[in-house]
Length: 228
Image (cartoon, rainbow, N blue to C red; front, top):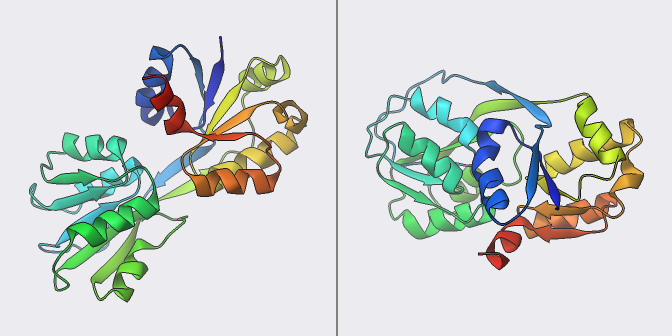
């Protein structure tokens, strides 16, 4: 049986893990980051929309004291579900990439007068707020959380890699790829990943992984789609 490493905290990885297990994979979950959540320094009345690129930002969303019918644009289903649990009921999700979320915002937002709040982590691929501002929208970016890289892999994961028990690994961002590469290098494990395929969230992430030296990449959602 193929065993897939999911590089996210257990709470966030559960949905993907279940999908993969339902199509015959075994999963191992180990986050490469810890999350430091931030709090708002200011409150904003009646924004036109909130754009969210990660479910980690939802705790920040909760603290903004917004009306539950505020338009929320999320990067994907996980973030959509996290927003729904907070009671928000006007949510549209994109196709699991910052680019698709930006395109969704352009398609969905008609008024250039109301404020758009972009909630993100400290490290981002695309600054959606700046891109919207260039299109004439009034948008601001608020950092909802910061990520702290882990300095080592668990002994359990190291043993599984050395025993060739990991066949695939899910990579969620360029930052994840960089951290993963550095941790493998630190533990002298890069040689074990010559034959291991990385399942990436987008084509841009896959290309970045290849630049780091990972030879095999595929889109994670293609794996799931092909097995539906």
